[in-house]
Image (cartoon, rainbow, N blue to C red):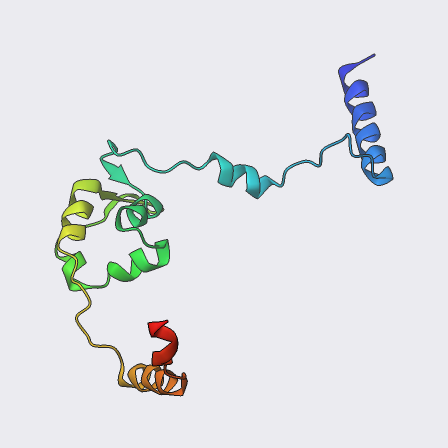
Length: 134
């Protein structure tokens, strides 16, 4: 029996088994699932990191990382290294420096949220002092 013949036979048997609902034949994994499983986080010793690994340095999503790139506290410290038109990397040491200098949010809670929180608290019944002492 030729290799092609056995492969075709096995393929037909697998397809028939799936159609019949046999549980002994596991379904083939989806191509994107195997690619995601193959991704690994950047190793700490890597000098240049991708956008995904750079986002992990900050503990944010890749989209948030790209929004950081537009802000002055980030752009003054970190410069992207363009290795080719489609390959952009960042120096990990620069990312860590930017993370240490990242500004904290100092704006107060929006007034609308404060009013809502106070209104919600006023609707709750006050704890009974007699039950609390018992």
